[in-house]
Each structure stands twice: as C-alpha cells, then as structure tokens.
Image 1 (cartoon, helix red, strand yellow):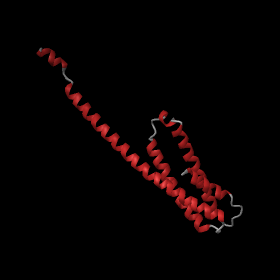
Image 2: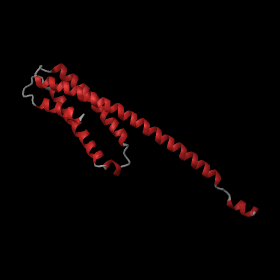
Image 3: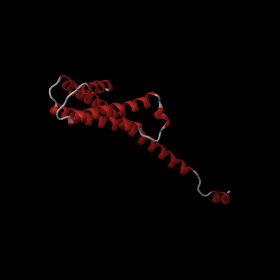
Image 4: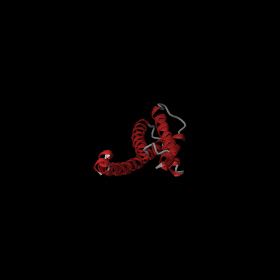
Length: 151
C-alpha cells in the first residue's frame, strides 16, 4: 500500500513540464500527505507507542486514515487522469494512484470490520459489567443499622 503510494509519488516527481499544473500539484500533495500520515501511524504501531496513549481510539484512527486516503487518492487520480498530457510518467502516476487507492480501500474495509468487532466487544463487556454491578449492589445491605436492631 505504502509502496504503491511511494511509486505514484516518485512518478509524479519525475515530470519536468506541465501547462495546467493544478492536477499534478494536487496529486503530488495527496500522495505526499498520505505517505507522511500513514508513515507516522505505521511507526507508532510498529514501536508500540499507541499502547502508551490509550485515550485515543486507534482502530477508529486507522479507519479514518485509510478512508480519507482512499477518497483523496481516488479524487487525485481522477483529476490527474483527466488533466494529464499523456506522458509516460503521468500515466504511470495515474495507474499507481488507482492501485494505491484500491489497496487503501481494501484496508478501509478491513479496518471497518475490526472497528465493528471491537465496538461489539466493548458494548458486550460494558453490559456484563453493568449487570454484575447491579447484582452486587442488590446483595449489599443498604441499611445496616436496621439489621443491628433486629439481631
């Protein structure tokens, strides 16, 4: 996934001349941004730094990253495909852009499945915890002074 985005970025960087450069610049910005953000997340997961920051929902963060990367690679690839000059580097960048988009889409699908499974586990865990807490609260005598008078 990152390799395809890197190849797309390298292809776009080899272009020396462009007349309307907006599509090229947008593709360059998207591919570079996706590489940086995904690289930072990959580094955090590889070094287990995400464990030190439990306040962040990392599954949701990964889902948002892959979803936005898919969307922006799609838009950038379509824009570059329509505004290119049919040079080899531009065509290669478009192809690798769509391939990277497809890989990010697969990863988005897997992230959605993982997020749903974790959400269900958390909800079922909270439900069983709340049932246990209610059961324990019923077992505790709320009026100990009454028992002392009866005893």
